[in-house]
Length: 99
Image 1 (cartoon, rainbow, N blue to C red):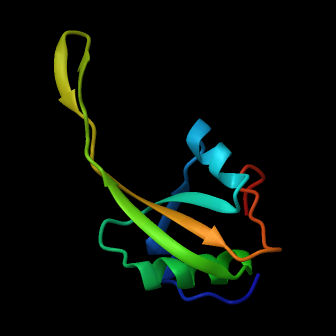
Image 2 (tube, rainbow, N blue to C red):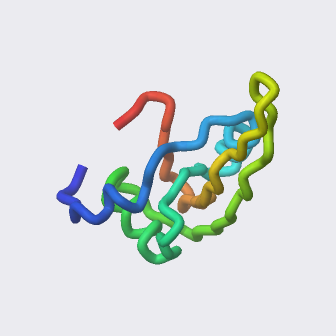
């Protein structure tokens, strides 16, 4: 792992491990939960520095929080920004093993 800027730790929060993310990994894509203020160039730079891979493209989306009932009380989940990172051919990230 190469040296990274401390600001990169504020960009990527966690990997997203869902069924959809697992199916996307077959097509050389990885999903991350990122900061709401993170831009695509910041996400690209952080992923390249953390994992020593070459990023082809970054797509982002904001998942609006849902209203849920929990023990007869209404609550709202927080909004989450996700990044779908497409890697160049020959590069892989295995998020299930950790850093």
